[in-house]
Amino acid sequence: MTFYPGPSKLYPQVADYLREAYESGILSSNHRSLRFMSLVEETYNLLREKLGIPADYGIYFASSATECWEIVAQSLTERGSAHLFNGAFGQKWAEYAEKLCKPVFRLPFGVDEDVTLREKFQFLALDHYDIVCLTHNETSNGTQLPNLPAFQHFQGLKCFDATSSMGGVDFDWALGDVWFASVQKCLGLPAGLALLVCSPKALAHAERVGDRARYNSLLFIHENAEKFQTHYTPNGLGIYLLNRVLRHVPPIAQVAEKVHQRALDWYRFLEEKTAWRPLVSNPAVRSDTVIAVSGELAEIKAIKTRCQAEGITLGNGYGAWKDTTFRIANFPAIDDDEIAELQKWLV
Ligand SMILES: *Cc1c(COP(=O)(O)O)cnc(C)c1O
Figure (cartoon, rainbow, N blue to C red):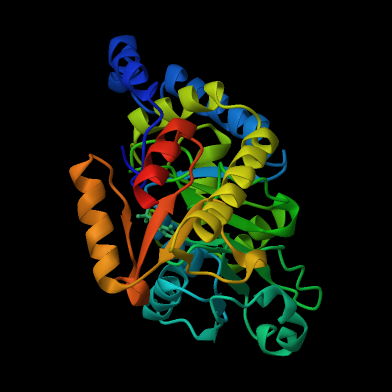
């Protein structure tokens, strides 16, 4: 039983889908064959149907969220990027962007702060950049943006790393120009595949930037995707499994409501039934999909060892919170009875 926030528990149906994939022969088909192209096309349609991705937004496959950080920096950034972050993933994103020699503006904020309330003070600074980068759900500390900031005074692109919330939270896609996630978190799939979603405005910006120097240039990715192809031989097994899981999951509004209620239950349980405390005290910014729990160093060590002995894997603390927190994934693939079992041990 695993509560690790990525790679995380797979949907149990994946066992059957794996065999099906093998037996179907799709894993040996050329990625420019009609058969493979129709798998890609059907998967795009399922993503639009189940996750509500708008019809005019492009959907692209990549290998990881980390790769998407790089694509954004290379293909959508000319003048630089502004990064608002409160944890390890958002910070790493800024570091990668900076290594690609782009001016980077950093706005760190506190774990309990709702940064969306700050935007009106920042629009002047942000206007020097092509793109503002936010982590929708900061997996390292269990925080989430409570609202998507509208950045009314900012002309550039709004980009969200939604790696640990896509598939578990119902987004208003129109408020972002670029969204990406890898599938090993909320989508309950094995790692090695990521989804990159771009608005028409993002594409138009990519045209202006005109980056065509790399195999991973967004324009090249887009030209292939228009033909339901990919810019390199893709993770065909990952795409097949994603297709099957999407057929099986309910529409996102339903999934998100369940995940949200379960998160509220988790926070209430920790506060009322245990001596553990949520790391995040401001309820408005607490994550629905990753619950970060804080405690004494020795207690944390003890609970992790105890749970491991019972066959339950907890998520380690991450970055600055490595030793004083542990994390519990609240992803859709996790069953209620697994949560009940873990809660027994936490009490
Ligand atoms: C897991 C995670 C990543 C990295 O994902 P990879 O697929 O390993 O590249 C990036 N951002 C966030 C918020 C994450 O949770």
